[in-house]
Amino acid sequence: MKTRIKPLFKILLIGISMTGLIGCAGTAPKHATPEHNCTHRITHENLNAVTWMQTSGEFPALSHQAFNLARLALDKALADNSITAAVEQSGDYQTLPPAIITDADETIIDNSPFQAWVTKENLDYGKETWARWTSKAEAEAIPGSVEFLQYAASRGVTVFYVTNRDSLSEADTKANLVKCGFPMNEGVDNLLVAGENGWKSEKASRRAWVAKNYRIVMLMGDDLGDFIPSVRDSLDTGRKSAALKYADKWGSQWIVIPNPSYGGWESAFWKGLNKPTDADKLKVKYNKLRLMK
Image (cartoon, rainbow, N blue to C red; front, side, top):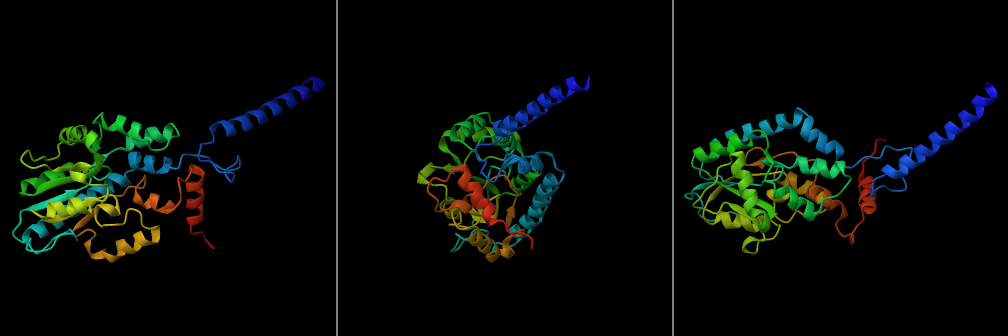
């Protein structure tokens, strides 16, 4: 009996070993580096961020906290016409009607189902797949966002949605915002997309356009570019310095929603690299880690 079990046991061991090797090679993501071998866990970089946004209690708690704070800040700004939230605003703005400028994606609408699909399929962002998602107009509202902006509208504040979605997705984006219950203004073009009027992804020019006719009492976003000009491609250390420079505005005139999934903070890592591959990007991120001593 023993002489029959040993060969069979050896065959099973070989089979298990081969299966492990094949499994490791077969499931390794395209961005895996030589350092990521079978002794390391290999997962999509966005897995933690997306699952946190979709399943944690902390994310809706933080978003409600942000919009509750925004309501207090708005009341203060409406009572004091010397307040402007936009660094682009100057001149005699005190008598202008009030307006809020808000980003859309991951500030007031939740695209985590798209991010989850990309993660599950082990893909990266692509214009075609993104357009497929935006055309559905199925993004849900970030917790607390609809209630706050409806409150703002009830106080006579015009809301401008400044998004880097392009003109091809403008109609679907507007339909999505309306479906969620966000206030729209039929007499004013308050959905300002990239490419419209020659606007590029840098949002300062759109803030300046709004500032000509409105006192901007609040800015809302998930990326520094939603608040500060010329930071989209700055180095990560430069982004921190820019944020700290305006420390008094956070929570008082600027409301930021946490987005660990994507943004200018990530692309800043590989500024200057010529068409970096996934492996290049992953290597840069590892090199940026500050390790315990």
